[in-house]
Amino acid sequence: MINKNQLFPIGQINKPHGIQGEMSFGFTTDVFELEELPFFIFELDGIFVPFVVSGFRLKTSSTGILRLDGLNSEEDARTFSGLQIFILKEQLDLLPEVEPGLDYLVGFQLKDIEKGMIGVISEIDHTTENALFVIQQEDDELLIPVGEEYIREIDQDNKIIEVELPEGLLDL
Image (cartoon, rainbow, N blue to C red; front, side, top):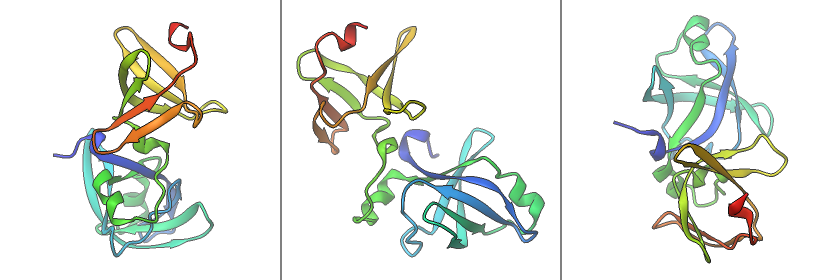
């Protein structure tokens, strides 16, 4: 069974395109080397389900038209409207030229040089001008700015990001 921490978001379905089951989509990461990625994963009724890609074409540098096996009508495609498109994080290794986005860091532990382990990144908040790491804590969530000036090391094997945060940031 696939769970969300195994997945990397690459885009989102917008709406049906035509009547043959095609869908327009937007993407945030350039991973469209379909010889290496034969399927995409979608969350349907709380379950992550892979679908074989039967074809796609890019319209712009961030949008395209996608067709999945088994979707043959506008009604089929409409059920995917608004759904996020995922691939398995392990598939990123097949695409060495792809620079993963910040969402790849969800599930990593954040460790401050001075304070030690802070917690696990549960999501990346893109709603502000500067992205934020979101770390769930007991009855609250901790928001930490994502800044290259704070990051000292990213250990991908152990999923740990070592940071040097400004004095007092964790006390806010």
